[in-house]
Image (cartoon, rainbow, N blue to C red):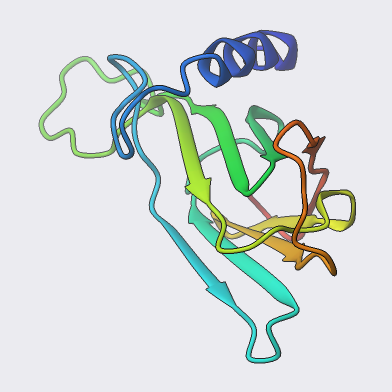
Length: 146
């Protein structure tokens, strides 16, 4: 899959916001695990997401209002197998809608992807009047191997 294909898929999935929380966007998808926490000083929201085996170029993050959207794809890693003996790792597209506990400064958000873990740092907004139409894509820095 090429990045342009991923972005088109993300836009399609973004339009399906009426999906219930935790539901799969379609067959062949998976729902990555995520933790959300706030620093003790209450100035930063951290989101950690398990994305083992996902290529960094196949991940897209967008903040809109008080929601973080994550979309991407994890390709199959069957290594040319002739027969599958056990299959537990989910592959395919993923789309996750993560509610944030408070408004954030989306333009100052940072994301790092290392060791299969994506960590998103979202500075809490000084004012809590973030409009729902505010939308910002988050750029990522890759440290180590993905």
